[in-house]
Image 1 (spheres, rainbow, N blue to C red):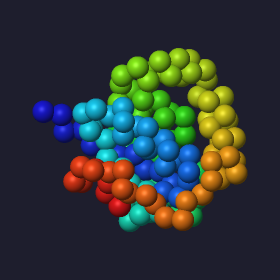
Image 2: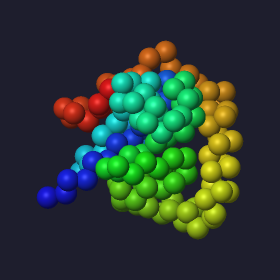
Image 3: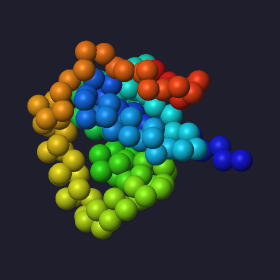
Image 4: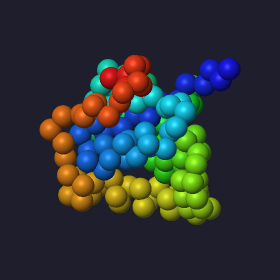
Amino acid sequence: MNNTEKIVFYDGLCGLCDGSVSLILKFDKNNILKYSSLQGKSGQFLLRKLNKDLKEFDTVLFKVNDQVYTKSTAVFKIIESIGGWVKVLLIFNLFPTKFNDWIYSKIAKNRFKLFGKLDTCDISKFNIPGQFID
């Protein structure tokens, strides 16, 4: 039995993040991932632990047990975890992390302009008990 804990921490008010989580849920056929908004109790605890600004939600965090990945590395680790045909996107991991993180940061900086901002975190997409932490 696999006891690996994998949690996606995302900006619960970001349209891009919300859409990305909805997409990940469709591909995560084995329901191995759990989710938490960065604004929630668990997200705030993790940000504090990482000495990050508690009001900056411009990166996805992917926690695998005690290891935390950010930016493009988090995205690639999530894709590796869910598998399926989306693994084809791992081709972009051939680029240097610095370049991928630069692209990630450019998109993150403009995410509200490009994808909108939600009034509340939409948790209706989570239908398995314990899948959404907070």
